[in-house]
Length: 193
Image 1: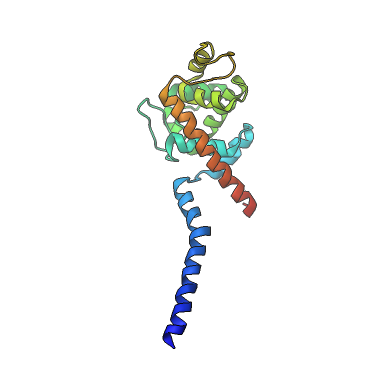
Image 2: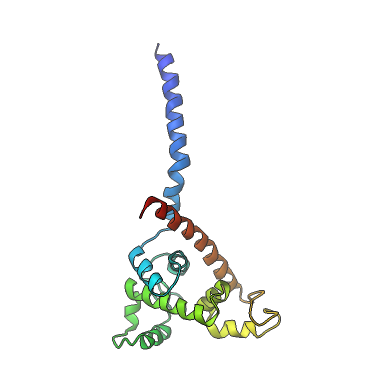
């Protein structure tokens, strides 16, 4: 009698475990691998500057892994890894007189500046995601140089290749993360968040 009850119970538990694994466990792993902190700020400034919030999240993920205290070897700071000189320039463009380099560690300010800068690059590079992402990483001047070199751009408008391995890898990483964050945002939209 116990064997008759035990076997179906074990089978039922295996089915429940399989359903859990298929439908819930991958999402938990995904949330660990692709976090989405500072959602309110990302959504606010993405909207203000006409950006896809999933793309902003992807840039933050690739730049700092959502760590506001991050500092690169080159000295870039905060969530979106803004260089102090660039931050000072952005503050001037925004008419902010209270700029300090330490302010780049403030998540709200860093995301606001990063979104403003992405919007600036989108306008400068015709919203071409590859050129904008490469410029965010290597600088707009460097992208202009590449566009002016037939080895990297046949038409002077489109990058056929990126000569910097670091920037090429960065662009690919941002594109992959962007695809993942688009899925995350779409899933959350379905849930009504």
